[in-house]
Amino acid sequence: MKPILLVAMLPLTLFSQESKLPPLKLGDEICITANNDSFAAHSVVGTRSLNDAPPLIEYPKENRPDISSFGVLDVEGKLQTISQNKGKIIVICFWTPSCDGSLRALQSMRFYQAEEKRGDFLVWPVHNEGWPYVLSFTRRKKDKFEGIRIFRSAIGENGMHVLGDKITALPMIYIVDRNGRLAASFSGYRQTLLSELLNKIYPAK
Image (cartoon, rainbow, N blue to C red; front, side, top):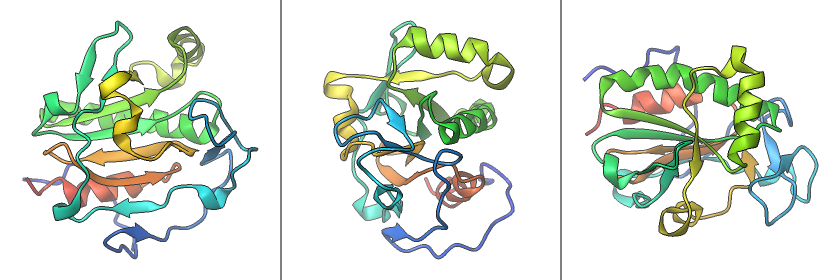
C-alpha cells in the first residue's frame, strides 16, 4: 500500500518512547493550559511552562494503549467512537480558537481530511468549547476554516479520560492505529511531523 502522504522527510532522532524535538514558539506554535485543572481555556501565560508541553511519544506496536472507547460529537450531536471505526487510521487534533498554534493546526486539517476519500483514514479536529462560540468563530474566519469538519469531545464513558493524562498544551495531536490503539502523540504545531509519522505508521496493517 502506498504511504498516505508524500512529504520531504526530515531527519529525526526517534526513540521507542519519547523523542526530542526543536523547541516551539509560545502562541505561534503552541499554547500551555492557563491552569492545572482546565483543558478548555488555554493561553501563553499560566501556571505551567513550555517545559511541561508533552513530548513526541511513539508507542511500540506491542505496547500501545487501547483508547478505542474515546468518541467525538458532531454539531448535531451524533456520536462517533474509535471502536466504531476500527480498521482505519485516525488523527485526533485538539485545538482552541484562542491559540494561534491551534488555528494553524486546524487549517492543516483540511489537507488531511481530503485524504478521507481513501476510505481507511479519518481526521477529527476536536474542541472543548461551546458550539455557539466555535461556530461563530469559524464563520467569521470562513476564508481560513470553511469546509473543515469539526467535532467536540464526547463525555461519560467515551470522554477525555480515555486518553489518559489531561491535555496541558494545544494543539495536541493523537494518531490512532487500525486497532484503536494509540500509536503516537505530540503537542504543538509542527509543519511536517504529522505527515512523517503517518508515513511510518500507515503501511502497517
